Each structure stands twice: as C-alpha cells, then as structure tokens.
Image (cartoon, rainbow, N blue to C red; front, side):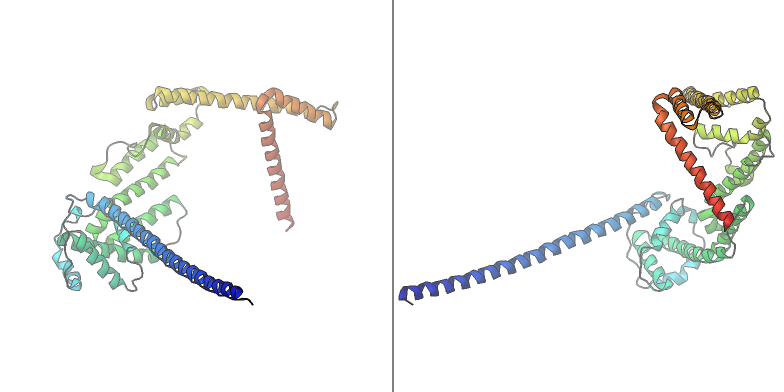
Length: 375
C-alpha cells in the first residue's frame, strides 16, 4: 500500500471513532431528557389527582358546614393524645346541642368521611384518623361532637346492614312500611332518640308518608273523596305540627298534581258515563292546569283519537280483503298494500315495518311456548 493510502486509512478510522462517540453522547442525553420529561409529567398528574381529591373533600365539607348555624373557619391543632378525648367525649358532650351540627347534608358528609382513609386495618385506627381530621377542620367542641355522632352512625349502620339480612326482602306495601319502620327504630335504639331522630327523622317521615300515600292511592276499593280524607289524616299522623294542611304539598308540578287527581278518582271514573267522565276531566284540568297546557293536552288527545279511528277503519277494510274469496293470495297482498298507501300515505312504509315486527314477535312467542310445552 502506498504512503498516501495508509494516511487515508488512518484518517478514516479516526473519523469513524469520533462519529461513534458523538452518537453515543447524543443517545445518552436523549435518555436523560426523556427521563426528566416523564418525571415532570408524572409530577403534574400526581398533583392534579391530589387537587381533585382535595376539591371533592372541600365540596363535601362545605355543603355540611354551610348548613350549620355558624360557619367556622378556625383550624385547630389536634391534641397530642386523641384517645383521651375519645374516652371522655360522652361525659363532656352530654349537654351539647346536636341540632347545631346535624343538618340534611350530614349523612352525605359522613359517607364521604367513611371512605377518606382507605387501607387502615382496624376500626380504632379509622376512628383515630377521623377524629384527628375533624379537629383540624372545626373548633374542638364541634369536632368532638361531630366525631361522637359519626362513631354512633358508623357502628349503627354497620350493625343494621347485618340485621337487615334476617328481615328478608319486602314484597307488599305493608311489608315495605314495616321494613322502613324497623330500620328507623333500630337506629333510634342504637344511636339514641336525640341523635337518631336528628339524623334520620325527616327522611323517615318522608319515606313513610310516601309509602302509605301510595297504598291509599292504589286502593281500588276507595272513591276519590274517601282517598282525600284518608290522605288528610295521614298527613296529620306523620307530620303532626309540621303538616302544611294540604295532601298535595309533596307534589312537584301542576301536571303531577293532575295525574294524582286522576288516580284518586279512578274508581269514580270507572262508574261514570262517557259524558260524565269527560265533564269531570275538564273540571280537573281547568282547576289544576294552565290554559296552554290544557290546549296542548287536548290537541294530543285529538291526534290520538284520530289515529285510533284511522287504524280501526284500516283493520276493518283489511279484514274484508282477506275474506274476499274472489281474490288469490297475491291479489290480496297487493290490495292490502294499496290500502296501506291510501290510509297512511308517506308513513305507509313505516307502518308496514311496524306490522312485520309485530308479526315476527308473535311468531317467536308462539315458537317459545311450543318449545316450553314439549320440554
């Protein structure tokens, strides 16, 4: 090899060496950059998740705290010995006014607290965490009182869940009424009349009233006037001094009120003539509904009546075609198709699809019944 060739060979080896080293340096820098970017993204995600959890907790606490008589913003350091407070709380809070801390949002707040510290293996450990948390959120007296109520609530609901297994599942109106009553009495017994009543009293009254009212409304042996009298007595029985003096106070809209009125007078309507029924319906509508709603209902009923009449007319003519012995099967189907086009116009295809679906459903039901009979 010539001297010039040797120089070129050496130069090429040196150049390749530097090229390999450069690529290696770039690769290592990219790896470091990638690791750094992943760490930054993970940190942002972790921070975002933490913010979401705190935001949810803050929202849950705010609903409960805002409903108290006075909203507290003071944050207290928890005492060094929480267990001392836990052991002494019953005596210290004997005369506490629990109506100042229990409100319609308290149970939802307690449900939130019950899942705030997952992974704790013991009940005592869970209670310690909850007590410490409440002491940071509320003044000490309120925190101790809330914790006292929470402990009673938590233990009672745990025992009630097990107790309900032996009750069985209610199947009738009376069984549902007794089921709800038994649950409420169990809570009063385990939490005390004062705390149990404040936590569950209102919801029990609402549910009890709803179940008993439904039973009266669905009683087909009673006339409307009798149902209204029974509902009046029920309101006084359940609500006492809180009763607002009307059996419709729990109805949300005028249309719901109208539907309830129809249910009340179901037996009366069954014994009326068509003219009497029409007159009574008009009376209820004018008394309970706005003129616009009455007009819309009457238009809808008119369309329904016209549709029913059109279908009945179609079925009558279809039957005549099917019974015509002068026509073969193909001619009958052609005549029926012409009748459908004439009766339903642009909606004839949709009508035919509906008829086919209905026919297929009936045939499937017959096949199923036949299969069951042969088993």
